[in-house]
Image (cartoon, rainbow, N blue to C red; front, side, top):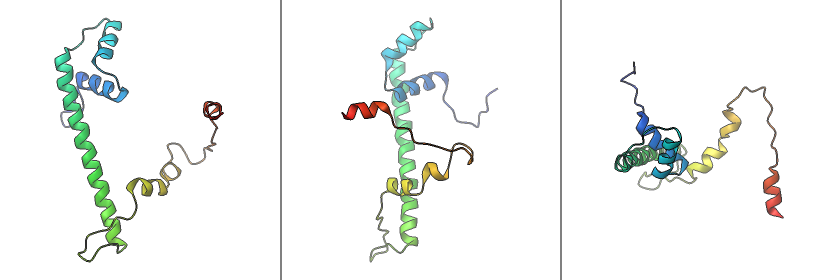
Length: 129
């Protein structure tokens, strides 16, 4: 009993999206399916779904960037950073602003009582030598 109002990926779309996120492709999916002793979708169907997932990723990225630019424009207008024609002048990058807002420091994925400590990675230390 699936909720038809919720938009989610079917099992084939989810499998293709997982391959995209992992940076692998159809050959890896074939190997995984063989290991699990299950049939694999055809290469043509995989590529059809892959193109659909790429389109969805592209659309979502543009929507996210549009919202970010609207937010930056509103901040510029609020601060009076507009040119003679009233067009907002965005003076800081969105990434820099997001980092300066504190990200993990203000939105902790755990309770505020938990202490965090930075641990040096020994692999990075050995690579520098």
